[in-house]
Image (cartoon, rainbow, N blue to C red; front, side, top):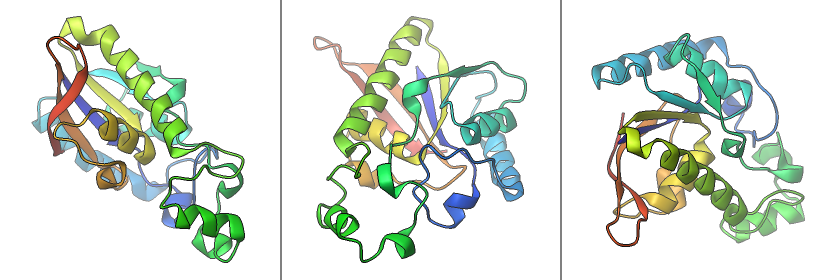
Length: 199
């Protein structure tokens, strides 16, 4: 099975370097061109009518429609971006100098967001949903596209990549993504993502 992990197109909050989690934002007009360029790369790679799984957030559903117009989208609630708590829709300039933000920075991103999720909670939520959806499709030798958030991609690849690379090693820009081959370890039955490359 081949999977593609795609980050949604650009929004206003992305351009302003904000923590955009639960805030609903539409794609900016300038999101179209990079997504259409990605669509061509996916087609060149042979990906034309995949199983299409998306975050419930509008920016992901809009991106999926541009990439695969008219295709059925399966919304997976647990692919939502991280709950950023009191940091939601704020950026560095607005948070700099605040004690709770400094504590978060000092923890190297490991501390929970005040009033929100920890990286561990978020990663467990995304990874469990990803594995559950894959197991539903594995017998079909399907091609699956996930149109989700940057954080969701980082969580999934931190958990399943082989060779393993850490969470922050998988940062990616808007309208960018990875493709990978899904394998299941003999004996343990654990899912692994191998031959990962940018698409």
